[in-house]
Image (cartoon, rainbow, N blue to C red):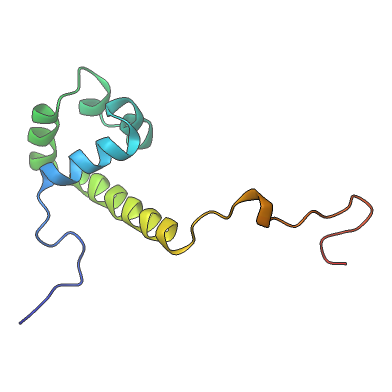
Length: 98
């Protein structure tokens, strides 16, 4: 049985767009990351998908951002934030390397 290591394998463009919209809090946040007109001016999922399916450079940008988001999510799972009580307090008179 062949399995692909490509995280985009089997992913629908609509699912990728939905996940990015969730991650960035909607079109406003997504348009700050990728300045594509379909995300900035009167955005909708339907019109964005139509544009991305017919415009290879835009789809490439969206897929690249999606891969970045996947890496960020994996990084967050690997190293959860420590509670502030775990931080070391370094006196002002000392440098961190002392």
